[in-house]
Image (cartoon, rainbow, N blue to C red; front, side, top):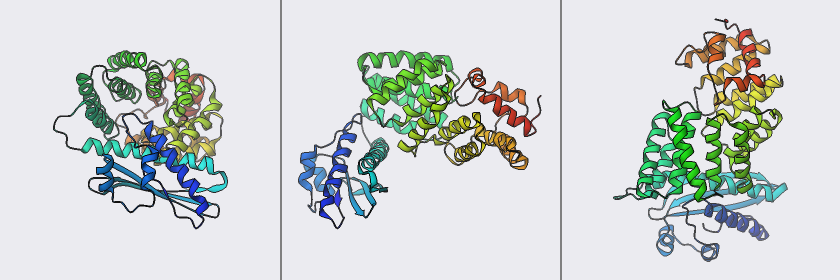
Length: 399
């Protein structure tokens, strides 16, 4: 982590560049299995024209993160790039702009986003490195890379296999235990498994082992919350996500799933701010469409149709693409607004994308769960009832 350069005309702005460097060093050091050279050593390279390959040799590092800060008036621009030390290849680069009105908040946001992006890029880079005799960490990194690939059903199975190989090499690996449980719970929640009961049982067993070994692990508590969600124990999952946030204020998934659990257990008003926080922390979430759709449902429940339309439109445009539920939600809201043509168009799109006939009748829709939430809990909050009322108004027959 090289010191960020101050490109502003004002040398007094060096403190901000140094703050970015120090916070990033801290955030990166918190990532599991990430070894980051200390700040004192990194700062010896300030203002030196040293090629990354030399830094790699001198410090025995594989990757170098460098960047710059430029301030003009109230606008601050931060550039960052990740470089492979041995080859000098640029793996990732991004620019971040912000308002200098609240430097501390902006600095926190920028460092958080850079750390998250670097973590993802390093996982991919490490997974691609040829290794003759992979160890447990190699398999964990490959599994994490597979977990984020598409199509998700096939890659979830591949990720579990890789994590299982890591666990076979190191039966005490808490990382392997946690990640196996993570993927198993995820594929249950996203309906990507034919062995729901077995996946839940295995996930619960492994996450209990992981928490017994590392009771303060934010990741392990997050996965425990996910496992509880697979069992529809939403109230029990709430303290798990709250524990994650108390440990890591930047854990986007914890905010999103805490919001969902609050929604399902009756605190409907808490979903919007928690999901907004999650989107701000991780705008590149592979399932950002799901986050927007949940917000749409909260707006729908309060009859805020215009806001619901915006949220569901964002869901349709986001990831994952081609989700039939998102288009059916939008069809329902348009119908409730009296926009019959738009409702018909979205419903036709949902039917076109669906691999079954779930949108052929109200009866079929009632039988299909969505979003990892059982129908009876949705009905309790009247949200599914409102959704079905919209579909009925859009012209969907009862049978």
